[in-house]
Image (cartoon, rainbow, N blue to C red; front, side):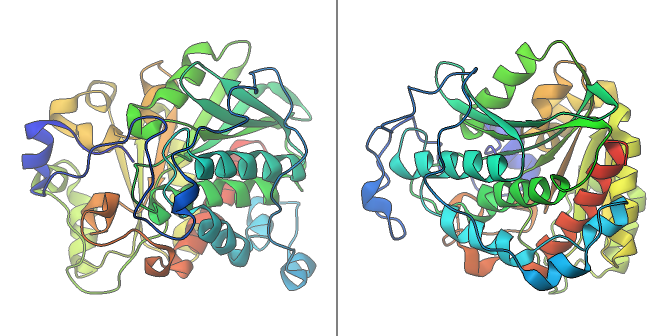
Length: 372
């Protein structure tokens, strides 16, 4: 997730400023294992184009969990939830969680892993080179309404010098796992899953896609950005006064929950609210408290009022008048290691049970949105 910029954002949050994003190709020295390889230009990043199908995978994903495969179904959104494999998600997070500023070697490896996983899940994969970065986009054509698209996204870049396990290895790994599960289902609408580049540098990847999205109708875009951190400790969740005043019902729920940072947060615009409510219903059916914050058309792009709720890639679609929602763990409002501000953002700090509930609820919600 992009750092909140400007004095208004910092004062509104009541938190210190985060490290500045890196420029493309900046060195990764001083981070977790594998950091010595970063900082070198990616050998294949300039060779991919928006019309290419990905080359043979350079990395392989986790193996199947036979137990999960034997008990899950594919004929309903609820049945698909049982197909989610938390071990696959955890293995992908562990692989991705190294410093990976755009242009670095590990950035390239994560990009390749996105392409390989989507291809293995049955998607037609393209790498969209938009000039300063590369998006990885997988498409699985719908069986009955192919011109209507449901999109699931997450950004794979991060700031230099920070492993970025929650931000946003958790979201990319989550998108790949949902894609794997939904690749087994028959969906009337077309499903696209995208790994965006350069979110930390101003939503560049998602904006490049949104600005050129034509020829189809976007039913809704789901965005993952930080879906792995939770805490059962009382009063571990920050919920600033302006949000509490705007969403008093959610504020009351969080108070009743004793301020625990263990709920799923969803931000939607009015045109995506129905999809957000479906995700909320699925999550709460699992016993996971979920809070939906729906912004009006006037509010969703008002940086002075609720800009902190539009600092990730869902904003790129709101700017184009397209329905989008953001699924996250509230990021800076609960995770002290956001952008490695207080300690490193590493996989051992993530809550696998929380992330699994996010994946299950989103799998069902995306499947329903795609017409299952």
